[in-house]
Structures are given as structure tokens and as C-alpha cells.
Length: 456
Image (tube, rainbow, N blue to C red; front, side, top):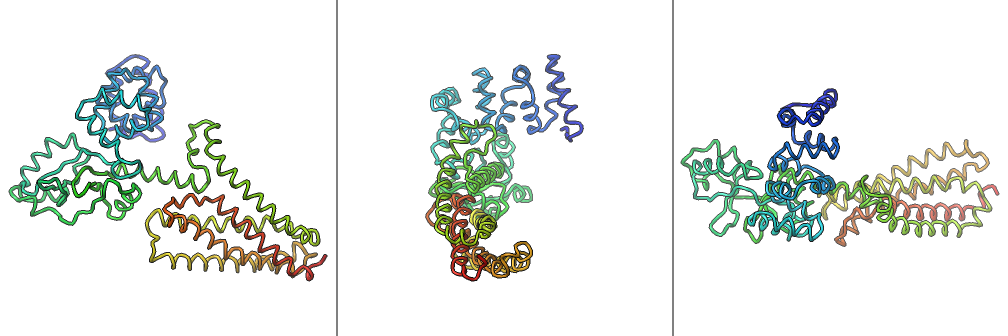
């Protein structure tokens, strides 16, 4: 297999494209199938529609299936529309069931039914079963292509079965042991199998304490389990019966998906992070958050209006409004990121919440002290007309604001998580705006109380 670096990638790609131009099928296949499937995908994405048509002729459906399953959904939809129907059906029939289910789930109902009706009956039944599971659960991302064995089998018999069944299985690194009722009773690794005597019974070499998940288990929880135990695959059960496995490659996709979702929530841009969607679609998805934040902004303006007399008396206070608002928002967002990450990774639970809040409050206090001392030194030099009293007002205001802002950033996602809502919806802009309002109230309240001590 060819290993491409940045220097020779372009040259190798040009060589492959030239074979398409020359309609040289043998040279194309020789060059193309020396590449890893990921590099084959890059080639496919870089050529023209006419050149892709040639690739479809030179690549067999079972070969293209391995490439197709690694494509993004948008590309899958595009390329499947370019294929002849019989070729497309053959491609789908050669894909793992979970990948077929993931692809068909993104299609309109009529198109999905068409492909299912054209598939092999046994394959379509497996895919239909996978499509029944709720989205973002273990059942939705699992594959039913695994190897299960009986505890009464011998190692020798199982080794022979692996030779026959391995090409159809998603992974053979783990073998799952079931009883007569198809209930999961044990697991053994391929390594354990290889080092055991051929006449040994599986029940003598298997592990009986098996970590598994139910079909309704959230995919994030499955990801956390696989990360915690360094699993390459985890079995999925329904009322104790083995129904599938979730493999590490599927979990990597889940991690990417959840990360993008959380990033979208925190930035109030959920659903609009894809660079391929139109400006109208992006605006439609972002507008509810922006409108809500706009109304919260009116509250901020209202707070400033309530202290109009204070501002008129000491106009220099207006210079510190951005400082108070930005510092409060930034500190709250930092605390938010810490808590959301902890909840996503499962490191924040009931036993650790108190410790986390105490740490974040302590962090806010220390940040407040540092900023307050800095302002006490800097403000008198930058604004000598305000004197030390102005520096004290700004410094104390910022100290209190930062201390409370970290708590707001930490507590809000915890409350939302308690309500069984994704904590990432406590987005950065939302926390920022809330802390802006709180910071301004603190700042102007202190300034108003000490107005007589400020130079008018």
C-alpha cells in the first residue's frame, strides 16, 4: 500500500487522473488500489463528475462499497445519484448493515423504501431492524455483523469458524459467548483464543464479567465506557440477549458528532456549523438564539438606563462598562466550558459537584483579587481625574463580578443537566449576557452608593 505525504500526493493524484483521461483501466486499478481507502476517497472527491463516471466503470460494486461507507453523508447522496440503480444496489448490499442504516436514515422515506425493496431480503431485514432504534442510542449505531460462539464449543472449532466467518464480521478482536437463549454469558479476545489449547472448552477461557450496554443506552455513555476500558468493541444487549456490537470506528464518529453538537450549542450556532449549508439555512438555525440574546441585550440597556443619573454625574464610569461586561462574560464562559466538558466525559457527578463548585468559586475569587489589584495600580495613572476612589469602585466591582460570574457559568449547566437537557444549551452567549447584566448591576450599584466620593 502506497504511503502518500504532502509532497508526492499531488503527483500521484495527477497520475491517477491521467489514467482516467487515457481510459486506461488496468493502470488506474493498479495505482488506485495501492492507496488506503481514505486516500481513495480524497481522489474521488477531487475529480470531475465525468472522471467519477469512469471510476464507477473501473471499480467493482463490492470495491466501491468500502469507499462509499467512508464518505460524508452529503457526498454519499451526491455520488449515489450518479450511479446506475443496479450498481448502487450492489454497493449497498456489500456495505456493513450499520453503515447502510446510517445512510438510508438520511434519505427521504420513498427513496429509502426503494433501496430496501431492492436489497437482499435478509440484508434489508437487518437494516430495517437497525432503523427502528432511536437516534443517538447504542442500537442505532451498533452492527449485527459479529461472531458469537457457544460456551460448549472448543477452541479448535471456533478457530475454524473464524476462518470462514471473519470476512463477513465487522471485527474479530472479540468473540462473544452466548447460551441457548442467546443471552450474553461471556467474552474472549482473539489473543486469548490463539494462546489456548485447541481442545479447551470456550467456557474455560472466557471472561464471565462482561461489560455491555442496552440498545437504548445513549451513544455518549457508550463512548465513555469504551474510552474508560479501552475497548475496541462493546456488546449491545436487549433484555440480556446479544443483538449487536458497537465498534471503536463508530464511536470515533460519535465523538466527532457530539463534539460538533456541543460546540454548536456553546456558540449558539447549533446546526449551522456545516460549511456546505446555505446562508439562508445557517441564518434560520442561528436566528432564534440571536433574537433571544437581542431581547436579553435590551435588558442590559435597561440596566444602564436605570443608572442614567449616575452616568450623567460621573461620565467617566461609561469607560469601564466594556471592561466589566467582557470580564464577566469571559470568566463565566470559561467556567461553563469546564463543567460541560466534565459532564460530557462523565467526570462530574453528584459526589464531585461540591468540589467542582468550590474550586470554580475559589478560581473566581483569585481572578477577582488579581484583576482588582491590577486596576488599583493602573486606573489612577490612566484616569487621574477619577483618583483612587474610581480605581477602588472598578476594582471591587470586578472582584465581586468575577467571583459570581464563575459560579453562574458553573451552576447553570448543572441545573440544565439535572433537568435532563443537554448542558451545552447553556451556550456561551447566554452565559455572557446574564453575566453582563449582573456585572453592570454590581458596578453601578457600588458607584451610586459611593457617588458622593467621586469627583463630579
